[in-house]
Image (cartoon, rainbow, N blue to C red; front, side):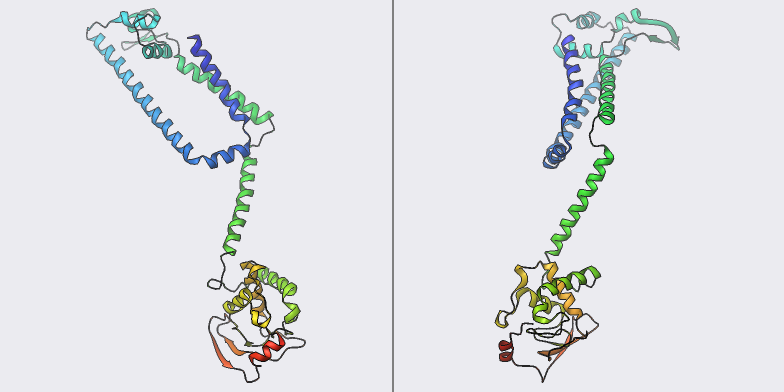
Length: 322
């Protein structure tokens, strides 16, 4: 009995301490890494609990049947129960363990713990609380004390702090996810990005990389004019994006896909798209073919030859690129 108490007491005080010793980051990574194992472990615990509950129910039914038989005059071998209670030899380990865990008085000796309280033939006994119940109660007291000490006196994250940290982490994960979506943009899925933030970002990219050849106001220089309706390689958003992405090496324009992310190429393409119709201080003569945008989205267009457009050889000589 003393050994059992020692083992249970050790578990009661050791388990909460081990839990408190783990750092929050380690716990988070542990749970993320062993989610399946934890779920399977919980399933095993539930199954074991169910088995214990069924066994307890069977034992309870057995006790009820024994009492019923005693009422019917069937003599029970109370000597075996007494032997179990006193730990005599010949009794199985589990039977001794069960009786020590419950520490109940055998039916044959109930008169020793009977009180004067009786109602409708039911007598009140002065039995001690079962050890399993007492140990569980002691455990809750110890756990509450350790939990309160940890919560109020130790400098460890509270649930509110953990929630805020998880929200910050979630926002970062959303940013990473959105960034991954940006990297999926290509000539098959690109669309106009006309939000103010996108246009401003596109203008910044244009000023840093494109203005040297196409002029800061889009009027053209070494490269063609973006403010008119004539385009060498198409004026819809898909064509502009493809020209930026793959470049026109034969005319001196590099491919920007190795230097700009898909999102940035979409932004600068959208900005260039908005330059049509803008005024320019020194606009270059029209080049390429007339491209009429329909419904303002550039998805469909009507093209016709530009009689004033220069031919490809002239483009090569002047280094035209778009």
